Length: 357
Image (cartoon, rainbow, N blue to C red; front, side):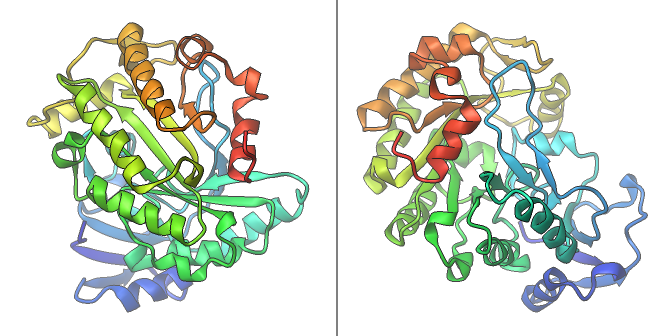
């Protein structure tokens, strides 16, 4: 998690992000130069690059029409992650070996203002945790602090901060706790120890969630990916029990369930780079209609049914949803489809903005 060094492109050396990084870097070496035109193979493994991004900061989640997508909107602040999760799709998705941070935050502000100001009557559920971890570099960049401060001017926007670390330094910049959804990945207690190196423990994540709830926030939890391995029932049940040792059902805005999946090359990447992995390759994987390998559906639905039954036993109901699953899976395990909720995107918007349904 600690970088070997930081490269700051000259085009962003005076940005808020770069100034924060220089202030917070301590003994991490910092280098300035012209790095924007580097070829992918020239980026150095283990380093952070602060660059000026020329594309669109605001984009749709890269879902697929073959399964139900939640309608999440991405605020694109960077690429790749300093954490070391064996199953992480980002490691295979990005060809570079470094972490890129888009430091031209004023351009991001301009784009977001144009979108949100021109759509004042439209609600947006956004997050930064799609192509990177929302908080893993917060101790350096203060990116989330800048964003929550900026987005406080837009009552139609909710920001989700999804992470596997616990950094609550951004809380001091939040004007209204109802406008931010702190979110943590959950898994069986065995998985963070063996497959999520460099991350916070489940206890630490839930302690962070409890503190946020105490301060008036509602939190989000994500069991994605759920991994199949011998004894998975015991491990996941213990995590569910732990959640309600720390949180009440009303503290949770929504909770997602998703089975481990990925393009075939991800499996090859894991086998090559994490040969010691203990859990990923149990079970039978088949190619879905989106081209990704995923657990054979009877195994998947067995896991989902187990999770749903136990989450409901502790008081969750409409907070539960699936990431990228078919209507058949929804109906057979939850008893309804997203259409019966008014559409998954609309349902989660209501949950994010405080509806009791």
